Image (cartoon, rainbow, N blue to C red):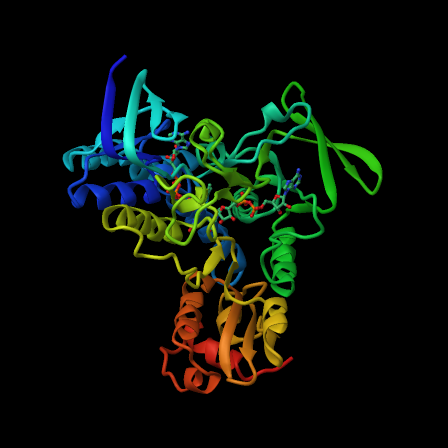
Length: 453
Ligand SMILES: Cc1cc2nc3c(=O)[nH]c(=O)nc-3n(C[C@H](O)[C@H](O)[C@H](O)COP(=O)(O)OP(=O)(O)OC[C@H]3O[C@@H](n4cnc5c(N)ncnc54)[C@H](O)[C@@H]3O)c2cc1C
Ligand SMILES: NC(=O)c1ccc[n+]([C@@H]2O[C@H](COP(=O)([O-])OP(=O)(O)OC[C@H]3O[C@@H](n4cnc5c(N)ncnc54)[C@H](O)[C@@H]3O)[C@@H](O)[C@H]2O)c1
């Protein structure tokens, strides 16, 4: 058993790990990186990017359905095999390209989960490896559900690889992942049931808008079952049977597939972090603003697996850079909790940035809430869209916009306008003075600041 030493050993090759590793290598440090799955991380290989390739076909179907009888004879037929082939053209080369890119930079690669054996030693691929600094960038993994038959559940990895659209499916959990994929499958003709333990979907988002989105998905054929607790899964000949509890009664439903979309948790279970005195809780590896472990100064954590901020791709890249920079230059850069817009890629899309109505009301004395159903506005009507709505939050004293929540077919883009407005501290008057293209969803944003509910 040989021993090897590096200045920096990075665990996880997603956007956070890659960014951190490259930052250290480019500063002249010796660096190694390990991944226990294919290189490239979640977003590029089994998350955001392949998901958007698939979902755009659902969007096409949805748009066509909306215009059926208004010029569209019938919605197009989707060749799912071809769609999957197209998606693969984005994902297939990622692992090898990532490895080659890291290799070319002179970074050593390991293909296994390391285990900490002491504060500065790990065991990986049968070797003891020591390093001055370790960076944990292992991301999130699906939450394990603990009921009988839970091993029959599939995760988002399997949804992205479906060989055909199943006749029926049950989703357990209506967060981002559950809502996006239940929209995709229901639009493609799958009979979908959504089982959610709480009383509404997308708990992080504005209820006024979530209700409207839920209604659209119900029209798409999704059967939402709230306040419902899954308790057992059983394998039948063709189907799976889910037994659940609702209103004190025990009942069951059947479907071809059941997906675990009940949330994601920090991927730390294989690392034996306690051997290196690294502390973590359900939010991830506990770090300070320098992305440095609060209990072991030679360890940094970044991306989803760190305890700081939301598990989204743009933040993982920023945190990876900060961790790498602080290892190279000493703790100089702090993670300052940037304003983060986010979007659920259903149709309509639900997007949000800044404070919710409740957060703003607890923070400011007087809050102005602009809220409306705009499904009768031109942009929605021309698409024959079911729902178009908004809620914008303004601090009344300063007239500055502090939060925006949009439900529209273009919300993934238009929310970025509000992100910029909030970052720049624009007042509603300054915002309304902007000239935007016409007719566009962006131009509608100005009119939203006129109507008070
Ligand atoms: C289906 C889905 C859709 C998503 N869509 C979006 C979206 O539209 N927009 C958005 O912003 N975010 C989205 N996300 C979230 C986004 O993918 C993550 O925030 C981002 O990928 C996190 O990057 P990361 O580098 O922190 O972790 P990851 O990309 O998860 O990388 C971690 C790496 O560490 C490896 N690893 C884990 N454990 C070990 C171990 N013990 N040893 C060695 N290696 C290990 C993993 O194999 C992985 O390659 C989505 C996530 C999912 C699952
Ligand atoms: N578009 C995007 O940006 C995007 C897309 C996918 C994922 N993500 C990221 O991934 C993270 C995880 O998303 P997610 O959807 O996996 O988790 P989530 O935490 O957003 O949602 C999980 C849902 O499952 C429910 N749930 C939990 N246990 C349950 C049980 N036993 N039975 C029934 N329901 C149960 C929860 O109440 C919740 O509604 C997000 O926070 C987000 O940061 C982002």
